[in-house]
Image 1 (tube, rainbow, N blue to C red):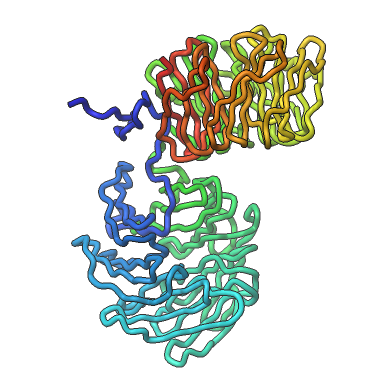
Image 2: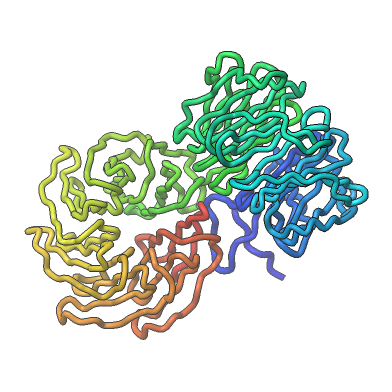
Length: 599
């Protein structure tokens, strides 16, 4: 029996794929997480399961199904020998982490609303927060008895943690004065404090004397003996602080920001000691390792990351993008492929071994378009409206100029000296890039230009836009030669056939349209049936891909589908054929590239 094909890390490849560039390891939706007692493993609740990852190796060790329906929250004991999760049906499930088996279940009757769980200091009780109904309940774990219920009309509770003695509870609230300190015996509030809109996260210091709170505009540390704000930590891009954590020493603490950064602060002076970016979006949660050297975090980018508190570097540095891949290009000799991403990086790959060349081009903006100019340089179209000319060998930016208002969605080589770009302002522009000189501008689209291709002899261009139209241009004169109204909605991809007479276009209406320019008529429609973002054309086939994550391979002569290539876990934004037409690469929102045979 043949062994299944695997990628460079040994993970199985989708059927028909030759290689995967990047990896999906430690990626996916995360409910919550914890370190194992020895700090070697991450315990990650995802979907309806518990996944156990070996952190030094980045290997998935086991997955345990805890429920038949998705889980919504988790809590673990200090010794990490037990955890409790709650599912969408409202069942609390007490789980033995040593024996990997269920201990007991408690029916809360709360359905899908429970978003937070926490153990009492003696680990005999459990707090649950029903955000939808703003109800906090305390449970006796061994008997399943409800011990206490706290409700508050208006707004919603979203966090709950015990005081150090286990007799009081701090409740985070979404509006106004948003931390409530309650007595669990009487059920009465002791204090209302932390004036800001929206409490995201909070944690108790090791000595139990201070509370660290992340809110919509800042983070604050509070002395609990008199409810005095000790220090304010601010300056986060976008202001919001979705997650906070104490480190293992008394002098430092951590904030996780809306901008994807983690900041290590001097607790006393409120000065940033170190800042790094493990995530592309909100840092939703952080856990500090038992030895105090690492922080485990998860973000809105669905990435689980472990980074060093000393350096900010990841323990494992896989060669991978960390956000969607929006642009792909081959060098003229086919020896290298180039990929650009919303993670603000460009990566270069060897096509012989399909490995990274070990060079990552880091920019200060997202990359949405690529075109290789010659053996020395390539052009990148960026979110900030600029075009960057970058050295293939060194990765250095040799030229950068403002080209468009809004995103540069496409850039194409016309000659060694000239490039064509298109962007959010609705225009196409021809540049002499070495001089940063604009020599021609073409405008017909009503709204941004999303797609662009140039004929093989560089005499014509075809563009597609948000207005649903396709335009064909004479690049020598700048004249518009034809307008095609073949789509309902945005046109996301266009391409020439092997000559100047055939044009293909595709978009959000889910169809590929082939057009004969000489005859001025539609030739064929390929019905992909889902939003299309990428096209590739060879002599005999049409490749379409988009939001459904599949590549449909069409017989160009009959319009019939030959096969489908599946394996991505997100929208496919880009497709590119190598110069020989033997290999096709797809780039996806799932952060990976897949290499397929086109023969």
